[in-house]
Structure formats: C-alpha cells, structure tokens
Image (cartoon, rainbow, N blue to C red; front, side, top):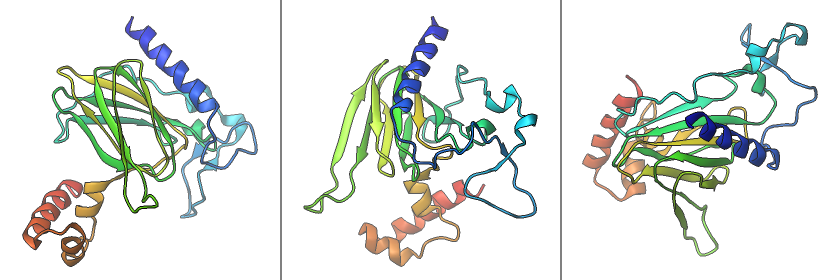
Length: 228
C-alpha cells in the first residue's frame, strides 16, 4: 500500500511537470549527463559526459520512500533530488524533493526558490501551506494559504516566499516537483541573520523596526547555526 501511494504521487508530479514550462534552457540533445567541472572553469549548468559513457546510474536515485530524521530545530528534513544527486537531470529543467515533518509543528520555514516553481503533493499528514505575493498595486503583500490533506496538491510560484507547517498530531510527508535541475533555496531567516559576513546591524534594526539587541541575538543565533 505504501509503495502504491508513492507511485500515484510520482505519476501526478510527472504529469504536472509535463505541462509546465521549465525555467531552465531547453536541451539541444537527448540528454547532457553532468560531470564535475575541471580546471576552475564553470558554465551555466554542468559539462556533459560523453554519451557513449552514460549508464542507467546517471538517471537513477533510490530512497525517497525512507523516512528522514526530523529532530532538527525546525522539525523538518528536506531530501533534495536535483542534478547533484541525478546527473542525468542536467538541462532537463526538473527536480524533486521529499519533505518530512515532525508532529505538532514541524516546519519547512519561509524560503524561496529563485529559479523554480514548485508543486507539492501531501503523501501523509496535514499541512498548512502558503506563499506571499510580491508587492501589489496598493503596496501590500498578500498571504495565500491552504490546509492540505493526503492527495492534495499546491503550487508555489517561482521566487515567492513560501512555507509548510505540520498542523497534525502525526508525522507528515510531502513530495515536491520543481521546474529546474537546480532550483536553489534561500531560507529567509538564515539568509538575513546568518549571512557571512554578517549584515550591518544598522541595516536590520531599521528594516525590521527592532532594537539592536534583538538583531544581535538573532545574528548570533543564526550565524552560529549556519557556520557550524
């Protein structure tokens, strides 16, 4: 039964992605299996392996059915499956992620994917999810939210701040498909308060309308977490 649930979810994600326009450039060949950059030369994407040397291992990943440890401070664990894990995703404009949530408030904190739209499907549990729009004509940032149950899907538009929170009493699991081989992630609190080197506290006290002691505390907290 567990295997059937995952099969159904993958079919849904595959169908959804087939109708979506990938944010990455379209491939100019059947595939371009990624290899590690050499001699300090970098390209927009990855260098390609000789097609004659490509094997099934270049297109394979195993283990998305395995529950992950959710004992982190935020109570969640993201298993990314992008071009770093499957070299064959290079130039194909798609990737996956499994997100595990601890009961009673496991959180995938507010973050953005600068290069990808995300569609998320709940496999187990109940999630409160949402995203915040960019500035509207009146200057407001609108919050759009929904409570999701198993089998429900929700879309997070490219670049917008979004989150998922487990509002149930049991573990929750979701699978996400993203429209980039390397969508990137910017976790808002970590980026703002854990930047290296730290952002000048005067910038943050004015931006967040808080006392410098609050900024100092948050920078110490997140900078330590990000640099351990």
